[in-house]
View 1 (cartoon, rainbow, N blue to C red):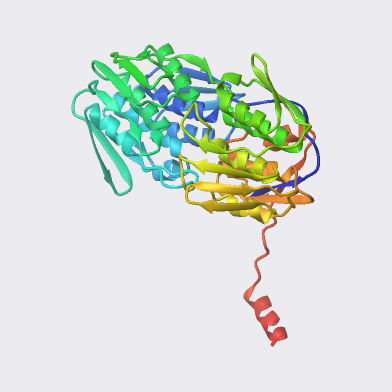
View 2: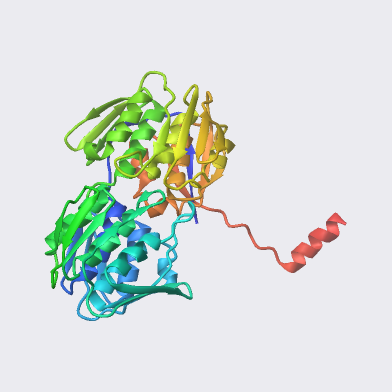
Length: 440
């Protein structure tokens, strides 16, 4: 197991190029199951979750491979519609194979998904949407069993949930509806750029979809889809992470291959915090020389402030004079990073779904534990400004979503490295007995 060590005190300066969006790549890879022909997806990051999805697709009978940022998937004519617990339990996005398998094969058995521990994330909206298309579903022995009796049929479906639209449920239902008979209308659909990217890929495959990027998506089912080629969008969460890191260290960073239109709310909050932000055609530059200002933030579905950048925003506010309030409206329990930031000297207090952050003059390096993917990134950028060294353990969370983050931050001047964890040596029974005798 690896750990990351960060020594604080260096301002980030220079240029950094972001990778493709993991959250766009994963549902696209699942969408490739909708045809028996080859599909090619470019600009795919080399991440653990990508490899897990490839393993899952191969276990279903498809032939998938990753090479130099390109994923090639050929499902063929025969698929085994069973997604096993060993793979699905490690990554929530695996549930995206449910819709394509049901539409293509007529039945599916998919283990209930896992992923980061950030609070309950039920899949009831997925099942509600698929049932509206005519499927029967039930949960038995930890698996979702879905079956269609003839062919899926189009329907009007409302996908709003307790905390807003569901991105993965929108993806699953939209994929299944491409092969349904008649028209499907999804109301309160997710508007995230990753959903737009998936829809564009499906359209290249021959799907008929309108209203992409709005709360109302209309899909006219077709009899068959074909293979297609696409390149995924930049990872907007990785973009935001580097933007916050630059502002936090008082540096000057140009983030390349970034779509500024995907970062409107983040840019607005950074400017409120005292940073200067310049938008390019496919780049964003952040500079800060003055004092930080406190900012209040509420996470909301896109185009609101993303929950996946809540922890990074909180890290910035820990060294901001005054009091900031961060309210989590997507996953109210997503505050496992608070105790670790407080270990570094921050002053954060939880009040229901809100975190009250009282800025401190400085953080201090400490050993900390990553609890989930985005919390890992927050601890890394907090370490960039902390006195001394910070050791972040369990960075396998980080490796699920960030491609070579330590290398990219090093290029910007950060003192950061990855090391192997020291595994405690197991003592024999005889040596333990000698130690006890000596103590006695």
